[in-house]
Each structure stands twice: as structure tokens, then as C-alpha cells.
Length: 287
Image (cartoon, rainbow, N blue to C red; front, side, top):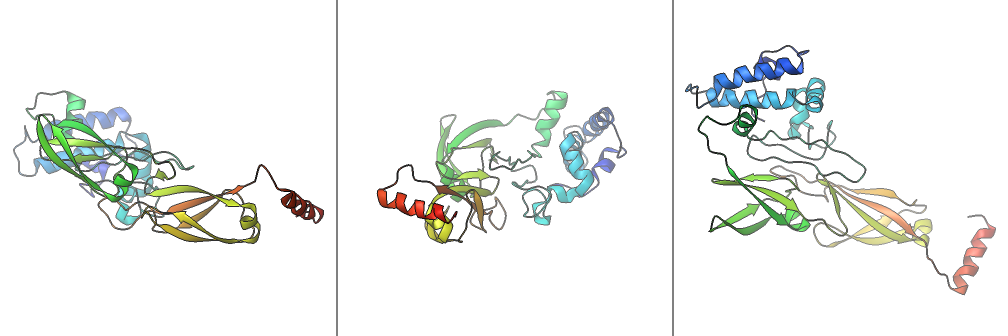
């Protein structure tokens, strides 16, 4: 986030301004402070503020979030986007250098938020002509666990070898900015873990007896080790058990998401004669 100034004030519009009024104000201010045209020392900073304000106020969902929560809606450190317990969960943002998007799944739906490149936004709005070269973009595919723990990859771009370091916590759609180019990350799915922002969901089957009587099971974790998990007597199928700080590490931040274990009771398709007898006995007491 570049600024804590009021977005309406930056564009010089009222809080009930229409979409066309916001667009007109952005056009006027962006042209005035574009660094290729305005040589003042603070022109580029103001230009970034103008673009940040426009990206929020021109988007209905982002504008509603801003009207309700202010800048806290986009600040993970204050419990906003990506902050635990904030109005939204699942991802973080960075000041025009890193952009993050959510994945959908796990019964929770996030909202995409991307401050993006202010010069790129300007070009999309006005077209070219200001002499700033468009940055080259490339994609790189990595495994789920590589995204969780971070990885360094060697890529070939324009015949040259480059080492690309992807930090822990990268997600599908994360964009990394380097000196000469941008890399967009594509994360392959995992057979067991399903990611939702920084939280991860895992489905774990347990026996009928374990659900009824309780017990201890082992579940895999993102740290690639087994964790013992206590099952309480009377656990219902599709119950969620939350393991704090066992999720994905926050990108460029402290802490981790949580790991949610979804318990599914496995009902045997075939029973031995003894098992059938015991189930019949249970049936008599209407368990």
C-alpha cells in the first residue's frame, strides 16, 4: 500500500461520486502527475497514489470494503486482507512490487485484490505514448510444496539463464518483479492438500469405532511430517479440526495460516461374520 491518504480526497471527488465522475477525475489527475510529463520530485509518488485510489474506487467490491473498513481492509498487519480475524481473509498485498490473488475452494470464497503496476494501468486506460517500455512477462509452473516452502528455479529468457527465487507462501497467480521482467507463478495442485489463501484443507478418513469411541490418528502436514491428532468420542463425519499455524507461511510477512482437517467416517462396504454380529448387537441398543 502506497498511501494512507483518503482515496476520495486524492481523486478530488465526493464519497457519493458516480463511476463516470471517478473515471473523469482519474483521467485528469493521472495526466497531470505522470512522471514522464510532470518533472516535480514528488510526481511519481502522487501518480502511484492516484492509481491506487482509482483501482479501489473504480471496483464496486473494493470500494464497498474501503467505505466500510477504510485502509484497514487492505492492510494484513491490521487484520485486513490476509489478516486473521479481519473483514477478509486469504491473501496479502504489496506496494506495486508483489501482487497476490486468492484461490477458490474449501467452502470459502475470497476476493481478488491487486494494486498492480501504476504505469501499466495508465497505459491500459490511455494507451501508449509516454515512452515507458512495457515489461516482459513470463510464466513458471511449480509444485504445491515448492510454493509452500519456496524454491529457486533456473529459467531461460531470451537465451539467457536466470535464477528465479520464489519465496515461501507464493500462490497461483503471484507475480514476482525482477529487474528486467516479471514472472507469474502457476502452482500445480496437490493430491491431498487443498489451499484457500494461507489456509489448507485436508480430508482424513477415520474408522467408525474411532469416531464413536475416540482415539489418536496421524495426519500429514505441510512440514512433510506426521502429526498426532486426538479424535474425541462421538466425532461426527465432516467435522473440521483446526490446527493453528500449520498452514502456508505468509508471503513477505510473519505467521502462517491454519491447517483444517476434515474428518470423514469410513463405513466398511463388507463385514466379516463377527463384525456383522457385533453391529447387530449395537442395533439392539439403538446406538
